[in-house]
Every structure is written in C-alpha cells, then in structure tokens.
Length: 384
Image (cartoon, rainbow, N blue to C red):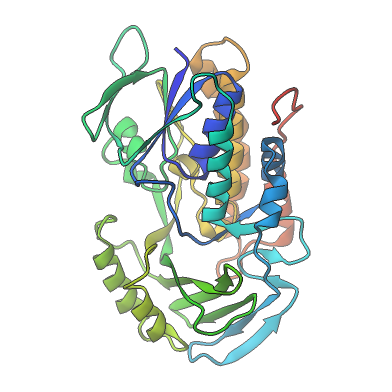
C-alpha cells in the first residue's frame, strides 16, 4: 500500500502532498472547509524553507507575490506615533532580507496549483473537501489505518498524517482526547481578519499598542484591502474554538479600551469573511508519530506566530517527512523515526525564538541560526 491520507489543505498538507507524489505515493487530502481556506495573516518563508520552495519550482512565483511594505510606524495606546522605520517591520524583519513575506492564502494557492499540476496517469492527488476524519483504527494485524470520515465514508490507508493545525483533530484521535495538554499557552490571544483600507495606507504597516492589547494593520491587494491583527494578553480562556461569535465577544471585551481605530476594527470584524481567532501557543510533544499516524507542521510542533517560523517549519517538515518515507523500502516505522530525528533539533531552535525576547521578537542572530539549522541534502531528482 502506498496510499497516504493527509488531513488539512494548508501549507504543510499541500506541500506534503506534492512531495509524496514525487516519492511515488498516492496522497489523498481531506479538508473540512469547502475549498482551500482564504484569509490569514502575512507569513514568512525563511532559510532552508526557501530551498524547499525552490525545489518545488515556486520560488520565483512566491517572490512575485510577496508583500511590498516600505516600513512601519509604532503608536501608543491612544494612537499617538512614537517612532517609525523604513528599514524593518515587526511582521517580516529587515526589508532588505532575502526572506519572503507573503499572504498565507497566496502561498496556499501556489501550493494548491502545484499539487494539482503534478503529473499522474490516474489523475494526481485526490481532494476530499467538506469532510474530515472522525475516527482512526489501527487494530488490523495486516497493517494500515482504517479511517471513518465525518461524511460516513470509510477507507483504509497505509499512513495518516495530521497537517490540521494547532487544534489538530488527528492529534486528538491518535494521541487521546486530552491532546490539548500539548498546547503551551504563551499568555495572549490573537485575531486576524480582512477589512477595507479605510486609512488609505500605501504599503505601510501601522501598530498601536498599550500594556494589554495591540493591533497591526497593513495593506494588501494593491493597497485596496487591510489585514488586521488584534491581540490581547490573557491566561487560557474557556471557549468553543468553532464558535466565532463567542470569539468576537472575547476580542471586543479585551481590546475595546485600546485607542486608535480599534472601534472601527471591532465593527469591521462582524462582517469579515475570514475572521480567525486563536491563542498564542506552542505545540510541544515528545513524539509526533503513533503507529501509522504522523503529525507535521503546527499539528505537531506549532512554534506560534511569535517565532515567525511556523510556515517555514511546515514546508521543511513536509519535505523531510516525504523524503524519509520515500528514501528506501525500509519499514514505515523506521522512516518516521528518521523524520523525528532530523526535525527535532530544528524545531527546538525555532520554537525557542518565540520566548527569547518577550515583546521584542527574536534577535537577528538567533533567527539566522534557527532558520538555517537543517540542511536538505542533495536534491538528486527531488526538484520539479
């Protein structure tokens, strides 16, 4: 059996589908949403992750889609400007860097097109949109994972990979219903959504913050639209992560006292088509595999947005996992062990970035070390 189920059509899941096809597997991607999800904040691709995009033939397209920020200004809680810079932004670091900042939805669109273009005489990667994994059964002595989907469909796969984010359903099914114990809260919550460019910002990032809350605004789509990120300090909160109205209420209650344009943003969030809310948290696990179930990206080792390395870890993790699975006819268990051994030092260094300088972000030196702490090895045919 060479069929692999990937749960999640985000960065990690789509990249993994591509590389598994290159390794001779037949991937199926299941995604709860009806299509590849829109929205999300700008993400960074750095260091060795740029090599992954290059080997996929997507580096030129990613650079073409990058944001074009000219700088940023920082304001206090009343909206008064404190300082400005034309050398860096908080979201992407130095503007003269070779790293790429682009919208998450633009990156997933590139990856989705790449996967759909992968040649295959039987039709390429299979996508199951509007469905999700409801149950996993690894009890068959013949091997494989028997999967029951929320739709009622049942199938057996040689391997199941959870690429389904911070609150991974595959992680819960494979590692137990208490799998949220692997979430390590970093003392804040954050929301991201789109709105009109009511400030007329021209490739310029604006931050407003006080002791407890902050927001960041930056224009996208040729300065026609804003992406808004609002956050606030807090301990873990008790809410249903599938209840956006409760999440909006929490966001309003905890940011309403912030000055600037907070009121406009809180009004805009109610009609935003892509509202997203989550804790600032890391996923820390002593293992990312159990039997024939594996985790990749945020599902296994989310470093949090504070590290700036979540997307890069997802791209690199997908590449390494597929490479180890396709490296030899060795048992799957051996390939999964090699995947963990190669990725763990890289993940540890990148997760440490999130807590290095609270409120300031990682140092340039630490970021440089972390983003280049793993090498891909010789391409030997692993390029498009």
